[in-house]
Amino acid sequence: MSGFLGMFVAVAPTSRGAIGIPVPDKKAGPPALEDNHMADKSITKTELVASIASATGQSQSTVSGVLDALFGTVAEAVAAGNKVSIPGWIAFEQVATAARTGRNPQTGEEIQIAAGTRVKVTAGSKLKAAVK
Image (cartoon, rainbow, N blue to C red; front, side, top):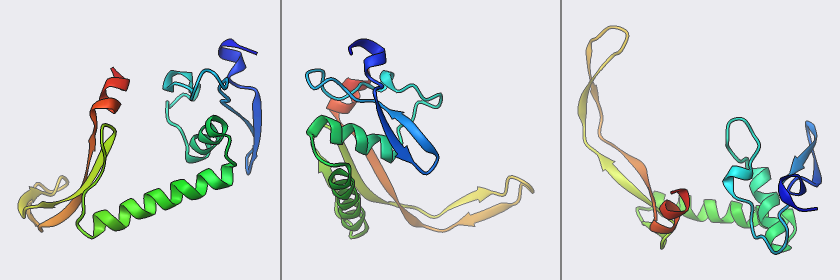
């Protein structure tokens, strides 16, 4: 099968029943975001794992394990204060936020917001170019 309907030929069992998972042609590479038929235009981890497994020929459990290890390693490194960068694609880093004065939206009363840390995620040039 080819074309748009050819992208949805595999059926994967889930706790909610069977769903169609996009299965790209081997020559076509991974599916583009516009191929996602979901109304909210988001891809779940299950769909991401299925797409990567199909594109690489690896099992879904192997791909899921790799993704879990990737995100675990990124979280540990950022929590330790290191910057994690995949050049051209994405960077994660911990940044400090200063103490500031805010307002309670219900009462309008001024409140003090303590200093803290947050995670900064920056898109790289390849990711930005892919979105244009």
